[in-house]
Structures are given as C-alpha cells and as structure tokens.
Length: 325
Image (cartoon, rainbow, N blue to C red; front, side, top):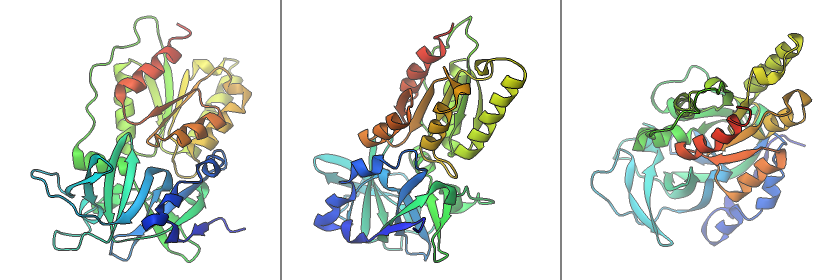
C-alpha cells in the first residue's frame, strides 16, 4: 500500500464540508502510527502548501469580509461565524508571496489553533493526504521571506514538494508574541530537570521562558527522532554509570506534530521502555480538540496542555516536578 493516501476535495466544500472531521474516531487511531493527515492547498503561486487536518474546522468559499481599521499586515478584516467574530488572514500576504493588488483567493480555511479560531484565505483547497511522519523533513537552509513560516516539507509520489506551515510563527509575526507573565519558581530544595521537544522555534523560545521562570534546568530537541535519540543516549549513560535516569531528567515535555517522529510515537517509545519508569510525559500541543486529547491518552501521556497558556503549562508541570521534593 502507498505510504501516501489521498481524499478528494469534494468532501471539503459547501454542504459536504461536514465530512471533513466526522471520522474523528478513525483519526484517533492514527495515534502511535507515526502518520498524520495534511490538507493541501495553493496560494496562486504554483507551490503546494499543507496544514494538519486537526487544525482545520471547516473549509468554505471566501465569505464577505468586513474591513476593520488598524489591522496587522495580512489581516483582511473580520467575519461573523455562527455568532463568533473572527479575524481573517490572507496567507499569501502574510507569507510575503503577494501584495495588496493580488486577489485574496477563492477559499477560506477556518482553523482552530491554541484555543484561537482564525480564517485563512487561500487560492484553492486541493485534497487531504495521509502521510508517514518519517517522510516529513525539517526544511534546510530556508530562513528568508515566506520560508521562515515553513516548519516541515514532504514530497508527494509525483515529486511535488509540500511546504507545511508553522502556524505558531504565522500568529507570532502577525499578532505579536505571547507575553509570559509572572510565574513563581518551584522554590528552594527543588533541582528539577526537564527535557522538551518542539519543532517550532517560537514554541521552544516560549517553553524555555516558562521553565526559566520556574527555575528549572532544561534541554531540548527540535523533532521527535532527535529527542528519542538523545533520550536513549541519556538512558544508556545513566545505566553505564549505575545511576537512575531520574538524575538526568525529571519530566519530558513533547509536542504532538513533529517531523520524522511525532509526539505520539515518541511517547509510546518512552512509555514502553522500562528505563523511563517514573518519569512523566506531558504533551504540549496546539491541537486543542478532544480528539487530540484522546490521541494523547491512547499513548499514555500523563498530562495534556493546549498551547499556549503559560500559566496553565506552569501549573501542570509544577506538581509533577515537586513530587520528589
């Protein structure tokens, strides 16, 4: 069977759009399979982009957008969606691929990310693909212009490259970074050590800020495979020295979506390895739906925290880090 499966876009638009997320139970079975579903779309530039289906609530034709003053660059205005007013972004503008004279696009993806609902204007929605995470690679040597908004790249069987968007960076650049407020440190007598992994530079920066305010020592990795390689190395080193692994790490914080190995497979690896017994795993994910929580529970995470609520993250980690104080 092909490693990439596709679904036609007929199920995405208009009245049939309800089918997009109907089979939630089937998707929760992807947990631990190292596979994800990506919604493909274009921005009128000839390139193919993608976004995790779990971030997409619905897809529709571009609605009437009410202009509003003093909006950040790329925010075209506001729409009313079932009683809620949400901002609508032109992705081609945000990514620096178009100017104001270019049409906004014929389709809108309504996304739910870190408890925020946004509309993303795109040129055309294509289809859903199901892809193995080991076919998803971190981009190399891309740091200018729209490339900074790409978190990963995968290749279709026809050779087409798909750029997967880093929604965290898009939101940070459009609306500003999340401000981390006052967080009380764990206190004297606690020497906690956290290992965390996230493929987004913005997320890593904010996680580190929270851990610094908690007065916690920390190390990190940039994708699941790198994290597992480093964790295995730490376990082997502890074993060779005759020390418990808890002297190396007290808690592991994982993202859900990551190139090469996702957070679900990483968690499953950790939980099935006796060397990590007693070390809690917390999943910190932008996928805040109940289905995503169910996926985390299926592979054994000890806690699930939706991005990015610094206070909630700190208060979730605090009791787990102080349990051996």
